[in-house]
Length: 105
Image 1: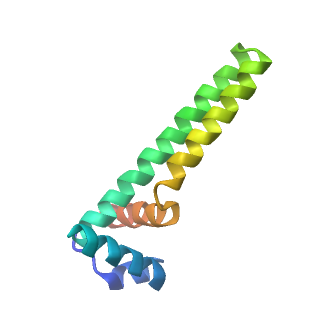
Image 2: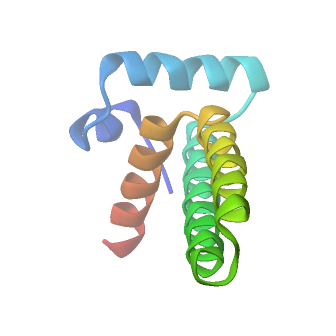
């Protein structure tokens, strides 16, 4: 894909978000295509991890004791917060949506 800042602006990225992307580019010596692709993959991984955690917790609701449900719920909540904290969720989502839109035409 040949991604330009103009295409990103037209697809919903803000000027401040483009500035963040530029910092990633300069800091890691990457291309805009690589950064968008990486953020898109991060969003997908975080999304599927969230789905997996919700499935585990749902099963736990039916099988475990009340104490285990509460403690596991707290542990899984902390895991979700860490997962979503260490990636820029808005940028990752917009990158995923942009990449999906570009690949689907």
